[in-house]
Length: 130
Image 1 (cartoon, helix red, strand yellow):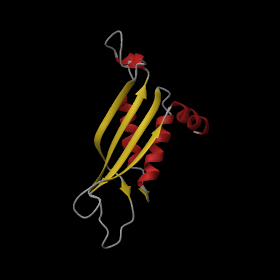
Image 2 (cartoon, one colour; image 1 turned 90 degrees about the vertical axis):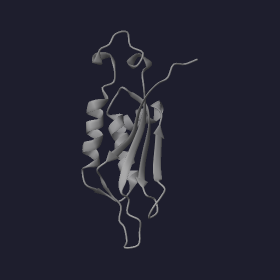
Image 3 (cartoon, one colour; image 1 turned 180 degrees about the vertical axis):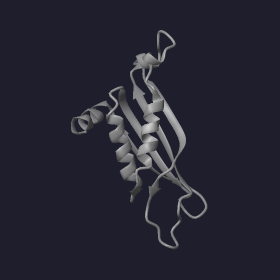
């Protein structure tokens, strides 16, 4: 069995400006962001309690928050793509699943979610272009 190490971030409200809406279109109350990162097992199953041995999520999360605030986007897909490009800048990240959802999807209920999943090879290709 292979050891897998994941870090999950769930239900983070992103302050972002996405979409163009007509007078009868449902306008989302907010966008929620979820992400699962695959990192090296030795960064989770550590030999001693020290930040130098783990992936420090705090600066990474701050980068996501700053990116989300950088202006208007027409689509959730574009912000999702930009977040994955940000992930590629962190060499410790081996794989990533990014989920961005808006709610409500209609005027009252539901969510609309965009999901983008990149493995280690996908991130290597992206790193070559970023």
